[in-house]
Image 1 (cartoon, rainbow, N blue to C red):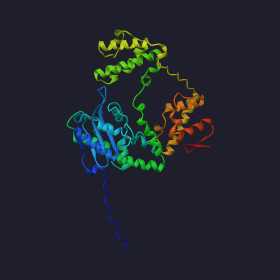
Image 2 (cartoon, rainbow, N blue to C red):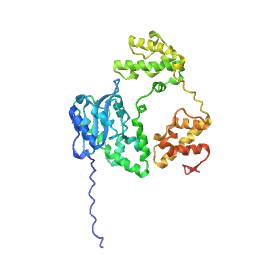
Image 3 (spheres, rainbow, N blue to C red):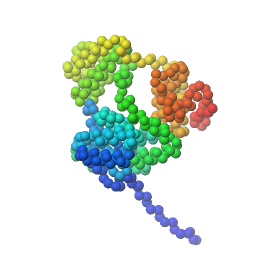
Image 4 (cartoon, one colour):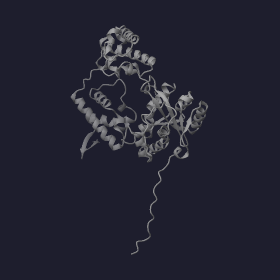
Length: 409
């Protein structure tokens, strides 16, 4: 029986290599003039990947141990201890004509703002963008490269000490891997976003990386973030606000993380009791600062107590959410999650639970929030905010079919 010509045995696929991986090994920069030259070359390309390795566990300010830069043709590792002047890198990140590609880059970009003194511009964060075209958010770099460009990374240096020199081959490989594939991942995300017509959404979301409020918090915001601050009255909040400044100064003097100088719960306890004597503060279990620091803390309490009431921070409103509002917020959350799943968007990126509670409360009570809610503006409003408004007002109906939630006019 003639079975026809024998089919050729398929050749095993060779894993695709990407840009700098196949061109050259990472180039390590240890000279300031060499760094300026490299940054000038990157500026001509007008798009580059950016990452840093920094240490902050035992320092007041993060200590940068390595900076990684990559284009399609090269990977550069900058040794900050040897180079010294990092301004050419910060100027690249702050140049609006040059795209900066990062992955979960908020902390790396904040170094540009806090240590470089310039504002990041034209940022494309692959992790954030991925959450706007898939339900995967936050997605690790290893999973992102595997999902988008079929490359497997082996991340093994996450706890390494980036201050030690010389860098090991494993550290060099790890540092390079953090940026080498980002240009390819960024293009893959771009193609998908164009198919889904979400490019404008991504551009809007990326604009937050070029605003000061992304990197610096107001004094009031810092007080609100203190665990237990919700139990303080106006004067207590004023004391806490002043003690945050004292703690910041002490941490700078000691070159230690701020929360290792005075823990949050101790700061709130001092504010609650309004202690103005160092001996009273010293009795708190866990207060491990010297006599001079204790006197600075006590003086901070005294300064706050002398403030007129009009200068006290506003007390957070009492959470008087009703059972009806709580139930409606849960329903809104379920609708949002279902809609995000159906449209391939991460619900975590669209709105947190607190945002949905505020959204529901504003509608039920017909109140205008102090600041516009995320679900009321921009791409979030277009994507799901208007739908949720219609559900709450009764203009749309909810239907459940085989476990799937859908909304109909």
